[in-house]
Length: 173
Image 1 (cartoon, one colour):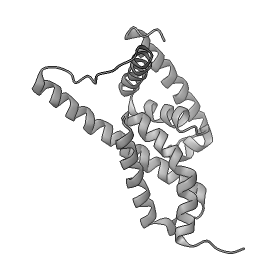
Image 2 (cartoon, one colour; image 1 turned 90 degrees about the horizontal axis):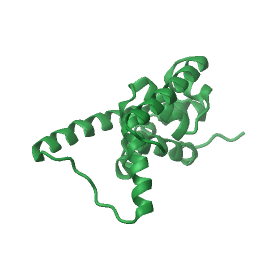
Image 3 (tube, rainbow, N blue to C red; image 1 turned 120 degrees about the horizontal axis):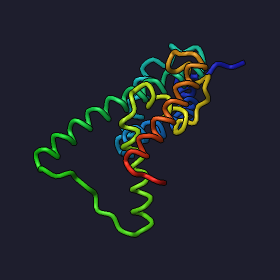
C-alpha cells in the first residue's frame, strides 16, 4: 500500500471535514464570512501538524474540536462587540429585509440562533455538533472527551432547554 504525501493527506481530510466544520462554525457564529474564516484558521492549524495524526478520523475529531472552540470564542467576542455597539448607539442593529417569506424564515432562524446563544456552552456544543455537524453520538463523545451516554443526555437536555427558551420567547414555530 502506497503512503500518501502530506498534501494528499491534507486534501483528503479537507474535502471530507470542511463541510462539517463549516456547518458547525456557521451555526455557532450565525455568519457565513466568519464561518469561512474560522474554517480556514482550523485548517491552517491542521496543516502545521498534519503528520501528527495517526489516521483521518483522529484528524477529523481534532479539526471539529478546534473549529468548535474557535467559533465559540468568536461568538463570545462578537456578542461583547455587539453589546458595546448597541450601547453606543442606544439601539440594536437590525438588518433590513424584503419579502414576506424571507422575513419569516430569517426571523425563525434568528429566534433559534438567539435561543442557541442562551444555552450553556456544554449543551450548545453537543447540540451544534449533533444537529449541524451531523455527527453521531460516538463521534461527538470522541471530540468532547466524554462518554457516548453523556453525549445522549446532553443532547436531550439541550433540546429540552432550547425548546423551553423558544417557548419563553413566544416562538411558536
